[in-house]
Image (cartoon, rainbow, N blue to C red; front, side):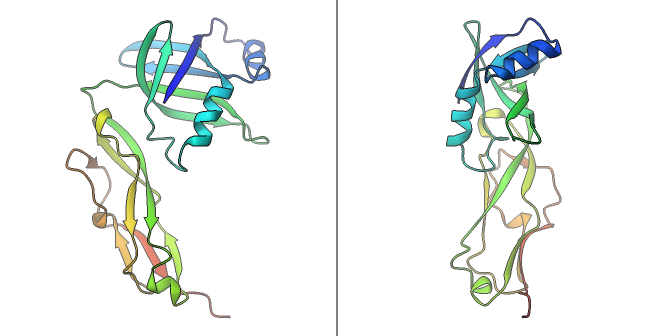
Length: 188
C-alpha cells in the first residue's frame, strides 16, 4: 500500500485543525533510531486504502511511505479516531527494517461457520481470542490466521495450537489457550 506524504513544519493546534479541515490526516513516523518526523497524509488517499482493506487487517498492512523522493516501509502502531464521527484524527507509523523482527497483533478469522454441526444444532460461536501477538521479520508478516470450525460440535473448542503458523513466525502467547468455542444456545 503506497502513501504519499508531505512534511509538516508546524505542530500547533491551529495548524493541525487546518490539516483536518482540509480533509487530511496529521501523522508521525518514528523508529530505527531516527528523530520523530511530523507528516501529513492525504485523507482521501488513506480512506481509499481503508475501504479496500479486508476487515481487521490494518495492523498487519505494510505501507510504502513516499516522503521527499525517499521510500520507506512502515506499519501503523497507533491510530486515533474522532469519537463522534469516527474520522481518522492521527496516525503513528513505525519504520521497518528488513533484518529486524517486528512484534505485531495478527487477526484470527473463523472459517467454516456455515458447515459447523454445533451451530446447526443451535450452538453459539464464541471467539475468545481475536488477535495473536507474534514476532517475525517484516517480509514474513501474515495478514491473518484462520481457525476452521467445520468439525466442531456443541461445547467443543479450538485452541491457538490448532492454528497453522509458519516456522518463520514466533507466537508470543500461551498456545494452549482456547481461541474459539461452540457454546450451548440459549433455551427459549
